[in-house]
Image (cartoon, rainbow, N blue to C red; front, side, top):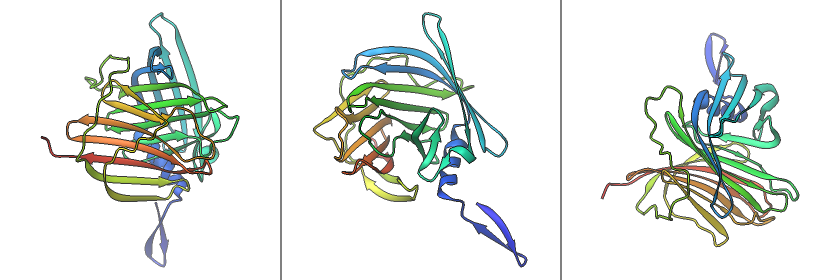
Length: 276
């Protein structure tokens, strides 16, 4: 938001939704995040795991961002990936663009939750997604990749903490765990970002919205991914992630697509309940 002076009076102008979205992500995620990646086959079997560092640096105005990913494997192999974002080139009206993929967009909430996604399912095109949930200095994301024919090729779970955090709350477990139920009596607030980056908030009671054709992956540290077994074309579907932070705190993030295969919105639920 900018201040403008008119006839001695100060007026505030609302920043564009695209800039608000850009700032929501970078105001939270700048810095160095240390963690561990785990990738899985569609049946839940572990494919690979490795340590990681994702570093985000910005100019003073947060208009140019450099991202450096570093990966360290148990066999001693190291790899790096580097990307540059700019407000001018990557801040779009439907989200900010990932430099590695011109058809991916980022939609961000101010508390660190975010979604990297494809705004529309297109036949014969890969469909990746990464959903973030965060709590101050710790964050996690779940990801999935569908092939051009809509077949789920792999999933991922990434658990990270800010560099300098004395002790991580994440475990070292990497294998999927037995299914569990998140329980009931959850109440809270839902923040919504639609495909045009309009924002709204509503009070809701949590209700599990499972679909018959969905797969559920129960990752360590009380993280759940729910996604279609086969990516549908021209049919509504959702992809969601759930994080049970404690017996009384729950976060979910959910992306919804319509019958036209286009993104409807992304919803962040921040829920609580009385301890029993």
